[in-house]
Image 1: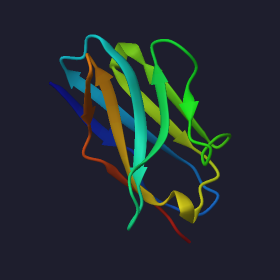
Image 2: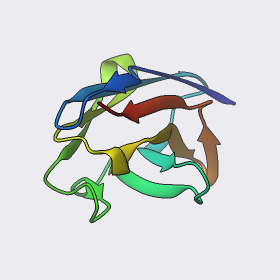
Image 3: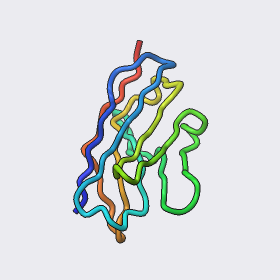
Length: 115
């Protein structure tokens, strides 16, 4: 099993920035993808970004140019730097990892963009 703990969510004003973190623990060998999805109130969960052991990071069109995903292998942690936030980014953000054909999810962290 893989355990994921997200942090860094909160309330931010429009135009502001937040940095989310997701730390993985447990059986973390062979993790080949780490990423983020989000779910806004009344909407389905949607993909945000991912980083893999091969290839460039992948982003949803809605966050390209504003969000940056990065990873720290030594800490088994993935980050999501979010800039130029708007109310449209308000959601619960979930971290996920892929390992050996399985996908694991964190509990989520709330991001609220409001003045």
